[in-house]
Every structure is written in structure tokens, then in C-alpha cells.
Length: 417
Image 1 (cartoon, rainbow, N blue to C red):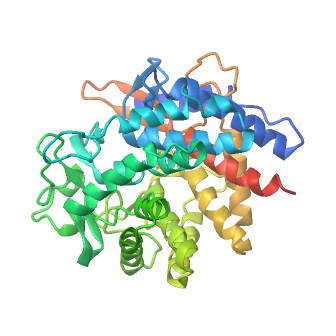
Image 2: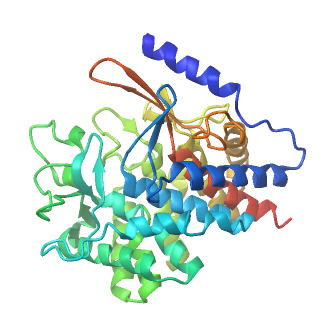
């Protein structure tokens, strides 16, 4: 009860400081939101090293690191999306996206006998001192984008070397899966234990507990476009084919963490990442199976969004949601996917896109918010109860990264009208 009351206080607090939507011009609203959100990402989310700080506790005014390589990659991608619309160079320079990219590539193992070329992408938090594949594969789109924008190949080259290590040591070609975990000191791949604790409670570990499609971020497509090596394209399409094969009728991939087939739990972003990679595959090949699978996920995700536009981090196949964590990044990411399908001619997603846009714009902290860590940020919540029963009320940096991408994509459509 105490946690619920504190959470309601958080929502009340946020409702008094959200960015007011007074401008009659939608394009100007979006530009203002991109400007304020980009500034927050560049000056508050990224620390002095260029690393994304993770989870911000509004009660203690303190950041808690969470899967920094992945969060940093997402922040780079969001900053670059904002830069491409606003042309604000402060989002791109050596104090922002490039600084974050430099920190990201500094994680590469240079001399380790087993891990040379791999990235020290340690997840941390509840996963512990383990390199997680998805931290790399889904952290890389911003690195390739950074190389394309700046002309500096080092970011994409580093991402490619880490992808090569993954292919050599972790890829299961016949199953279209990739192992999830690597020990950061020995380079030993985890094949009999999952890095995700929820997958270690059963009587027997299965392949689906220790390996996943890991096509989030479509790393191998980016590697193919960057190098023109056909073998990377073959891997990417094999993973896409595996996703089509293993998609459940409900439009999600229930066999793989963070979904849970035993409880029926659905994590919205995980499924959206898979669908996004399938749209990348469709763009590359025009294979209708990829488009149909992405459409199934997009339609299923519409059912996760509530009438006021909000989404929650934990949902269930029976339609229930656990309302303790608001996933603003899911609202924006769904908007990104729906917008791509809308541009392909699927008008059915128009209302959902507008609902996500409305929620995202309304749930941005004011650019003059008295807590500079929140000024211009977009809202996403998490309630953490610690072992000593204390509560952390978290606003996550992820929502800002995804909101910047969504708003930039939306503006690229309406801005041309």
C-alpha cells in the first residue's frame, strides 16, 4: 500500500510539471519537444564520460546505472534522430552523440586472448556481471547511424567486430538463435544457465532459456550494409525466418525472455524490436512473410495500449496489465512501428499513432523544470522496492531516447506537408 501511495504521489507530482501543449501548430510542438528532449539527453542523461546514466530516482535525486552500454546506444540513436530534424549540432558533437559513441567503442576488448573484438557490454543490475548479447545487438543501430552521419567509420567498425565475435562463438545457425550470455573475464559462453534469473527456476534448462533470436537492433543487416559482405545478410535473414517460424498466434514471441509462457507475461518492447527487425528484413527483400509477422505484432500491440494512450511494462495474454510501471518508451516505440506500417499503406494504425503522439507530448517534463535532471525528459516510471523495504521511484532515460525517435519520424511525415 505504501508503494502504491508513493507511486500515486509521483504521478501527481509529474502532472503539475509536464510540458504544456498550448501551440496550435503541431509541427512547432514537435520541434519544441525534440529540442527540449535532445537537450536533456545530451546534457543530463549522458554523464561526463558519455555514458547513459540509466534510472533516475526522483526522491533521492540520484542516478542508478542500468545496462549502460545498451542505454547509451539507445540515447545515441535518439539524439541523432533529433539532430536530423532540428539540425542542432549540440546533439551531434564531441559533447553529445559522438562522446557517447566514443565511450561505447572504448568498451572493446583489444588484447584479451578469448574476447578480442567483443564488447565489454556488461548488463549489471539483477543480471549481474555478465555480457548480454542483446545489450550489443540492440545497442548498435545508433553506432551505425553515427558513422553514416559523421563519415567516421570507427563506430560501425567496432560494432561489426563485436558482431563477428558473436557469430563465431554464439550463433546457432540451424536453430536461428544466438546464446544470451558471456562471462566477461573468461569469454565462456553460457550454454547451461541463463543470464536471466527467471529462466533458471525450472527443473530443466532448455535451449530457449539460454538462447534467443537476438535480432533486436538488426545488427547483421547493418553489418551487411556497412561491409557489403553477403554472409551477414544470410545471418540476418536466417534470424528473420526464425522469428516468423516461432511467432505465436497472438503476435508475440512467448517462448523468449522477457516474455513468459508460464505466466502469460508480455513485455511490449521486446516484441516490437522483433517486429522492427522484420520490417527491416521486408525492406531488404520484400518477403511478404516478414511484413505479415510485423503486422500481427503491430495489431496485437494496439490491444496493450489503453484508451488514454498509456502502456504498462508488464502485460498478460488475458488482457490484464500490472499498473505499477508506465512504459513511455513502449508508447513511442509502438508509434514508430505503426508509423512505418502507415507509410506502407496501412491506414488502420492512424488513430493509434495519434494516440501515442498525444500521450508522448503530454508526458514530457517542462524544459524549465526545477530538477535539471528531468527538464525536457519524457516520462517512464519504475517502482523498485529494495531489500531494506525502501522504495525507489524511478524515471527512466529510455523514454526520452524512444520519444526522440518517434517524434522525429512523425515530423518527417507531417513536416513535408
